[in-house]
Length: 483
Ligand code: HEM
Image 1 (cartoon, protein in one colour):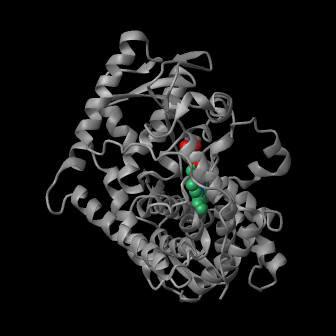
Image 2: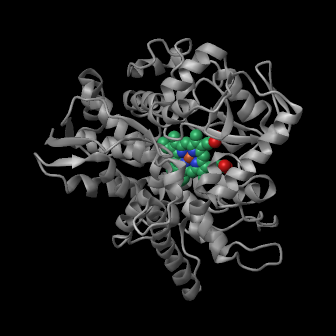
């Protein structure tokens, strides 16, 4: 069994933890209304659908991609859409992506953006913090995402993928989204947190994450209901189960007096500016954020890759042919997963991340006035960039709804303007787990597609939901066939 190394922290956390956020939905709505009043008293909103619209609010849940593409065509790259009570400025296209992620990065903050909805679950982890507190933690955890470290973790990824593949039987029907979620959580527990034997914890966590996130697919009023089986009550109970798993591991390592391996080891051996260990709730928030960001995204991507290969036989044959040629029926080694060794698979993964970027929206709030593609955007307003929508602009990707990995042939990829392809975000807050996620996706693909073929049970396109990462509503069923 591969061992995850122990890492030594290179810095202490000097910055103060931010003040708690307002978790009550009503109080948050009141805040939003007051803020809008302030904005409107001194500035105009960018053009768009600025009047309250029930149909837009419903459509942003049922068909966000269609609604946003229509608005982009009508109003240009920067426009407003009012969801029931809150206007949001959307910024679509290569230029504005680059501006938000790099050029005018300092005009935006994350904490008060729409990720605030996830604060009750994720707390003050990397996704919900800004400034020195965010920077200190990002630097602290960076060694766990270094090339050499990930190459070592790749052995764990391969080992887990092989073990999971060996449980599958000819003719068995699997629902791939949930199947991969458990596998991805097992890999995250071992490879990220450094928990060697997961003892079925991945199942508790998979169910707990799913129930905690399900509430985000409900209308605001339903989210507030306090009844025993309401989404809110279920989400709170699920959060407690999730916390119990993570806290138990933190307590156990503290009792043993051994911080242990992985990112959790880094967090537990780090100190504040007075040399004291970090509080357990601080460690918990970073660990849960990594578990969330580290499994939900890869789960979605792998699921949609299987879906596209299932309905595009030519691409599937190319991927299988390459795996047969390069690996000659052996298991992959970490060196096969560097992104160079399997170029056909790599292009299919890139195209999957174009069509279905799991983190489809980057929610921010402006901290100062800023001009995006010539449009004035006032301070304090919610601004969203969206990889998903940009990735479907026909001027960047002709016939954008067609799955075509050849778009990422070297010459064609090189001709894309900067900001056109942003499944991992960009700039100084680019996805911390990019390399981890890419290695994991390559490991799962190389192991599974060289051993078996997953045949779709239905030819119908799944409905893509956004809760809060993209996913297929109701999951996707496949029949397992050996190759
Ligand atoms: C296919 C896999 C993945 C995709 C597509 C993805 C995508 C993204 C995107 C788009 C962002 C930035 C969002 C924004 O600009 O608003 C992000 C941030 C982040 N991701 Fe990933 N991610 C993936 C896998 C992972 C994994 C495996 C981990 C953990 C091991 C991870 C951890 C994070 C963290 C911690 C951040 C916040 C970084 C910061 O604010 O400094 N991600 N990810």
